Length: 239
Ligand SMILES: Nc1ncnc2c1ncn2[C@@H]1O[C@H](COP(=O)(O)OP(=O)(O)OP(=O)(O)O)[C@@H](O)[C@H]1O
Image (cartoon, rainbow, N blue to C red; front, side, top):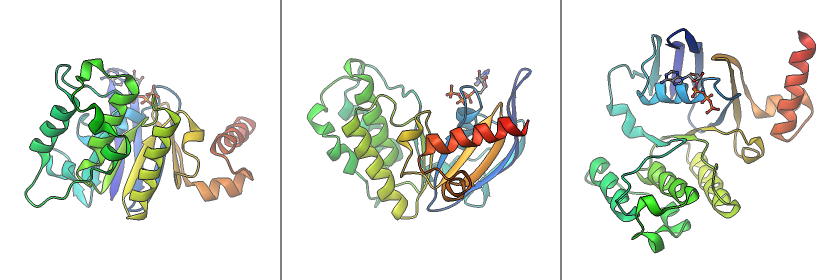
C-alpha cells in the first residue's frame, strides 16, 4: 500500500530523513517510533505531501505521490497538534470538513463521534475545548471518510484512559477490515496489543522494521517497552 524508496529530506544542513526505504501493507498496524527529532513526523508529512522529499519517492497504492493529491482521499490523518478555526463550533468544523471531502454516495463512519459522545458538545467553540476534546474531534475526522490508510501521530496523547481505550478499540476494528494504520507514540504501553510491526527511526535513519512477533521471539519479552529495552541493550553491547 505504501512503499518509500530512498526518501531523503534535509532542512538546511540537518538530515531529517536519510535514505528511508520501507513498505507498509494492507491489514498492518505499524508503530513508527524513535527519539524526539528522529524524523517520524517528517516521514508522515512526506506521505501526506506536506513535505516534499529532496530525493527518493513514495508510492501509495502503486501510484507515485509526487505532485498528486487524489491519493489523499484514501488517507485519514490525525496530526500531533490539530489546529482548527477557533471560533467555529465542533459541529461546524465537522460539517465543514464533510462538505469539503464528501462525495455523493459516500458512506460516513460516525462511530467515534457517538462513542466519544461528541454530539453533546457540538455547540462548543474550538477555542474553549480541552486538549483531550480537541484530540477526540481530530480522531473523529480521521475516521469519518472510511479511509483505507490511517495515519495517527501520537493519537492517545492527552486522551483520558476511557477515550484512549475507545480509540484503540476502533483502530483494532478497522485493522480487522484490512486497513493499514501507522501510529507514532512515545508511550509504548499504549501500543501493546495494537501494533503488528515496529519501525524504528533514529537520527533520520531507519534502524529496523520488524514484526512485533519476531521481536518478541528474539528478545523473549512480551511487552513493547521491555522488547525495546532489550533491543537497546543488545545494540549497546554490539558497539
Ligand atoms: N520545517 C522544518 N524546518 C527545519 N527543521 C525541521 C522542520 N521540520 C522538522 N525539522 C527538524 O527535523 C528533525 C526531525 O523532526 P520530526 O518532527 O520529524 O521528528 P519526530 O521524530 O517527529 O520528533 P518528536 O518525537 O519530537 O515528535 C528535527 O531535528 C526537527 O527539528
